[in-house]
Length: 259
Image (cartoon, rainbow, N blue to C red; front, side, top):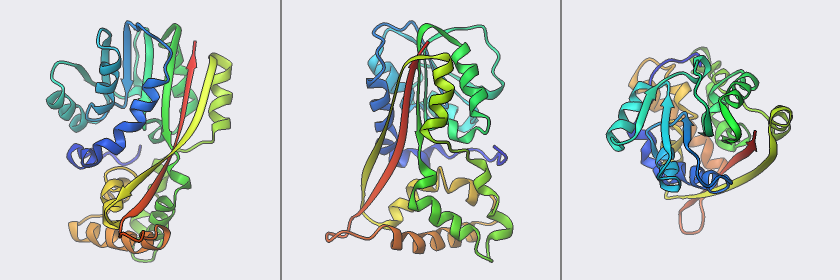
């Protein structure tokens, strides 16, 4: 990821329930009863790792993330768990895991084929690789942000921000997984978040998908104006319901494979 500004855990956790439900759904589909060791890759502030602990309370679980602020938040939220600041793309370890879990992380990594192959090497025999990837690039919110970023006012600063993401189709992931893993399961889910207003959509996305655009702007005033421009765009894409609420569908791809 080219943009190296750190994450904001407090802003991220404003939508903790919406961000945690996919981790709950992914963990529930893993068919391993007594895993000894589990690693959560891109654990963020620890909400997904805590899901793993709830399902497998006897397991040895470690959460890793390359964000210092996220790991500090995880340590504060869950002080009895193990946390490490670590970049998974540079990780060198002889340890083997029964489960390697990753919830909404790999889209920030460019060479995902290498990443997946490296993670498979860290699995024990019959171990599981379980991953959730937001299908953010196909969503109207993503397209709205991109349109704003290409406006004359913002283009010089933000037009390259989309390069921080790498999205692939289910076919891409299957072709990588099928060489190394067995019993592959894949599915997609659209989560309909019921938002009080369009502003809530902006608030949810500005700590993730919009973050890389905002971080390229120099002043707080510029960030606020960029957010306002995005807000105008998304009111067209997400019409308000009769009661004033806004439905915000969020598509996510899941896959699990066993070694």
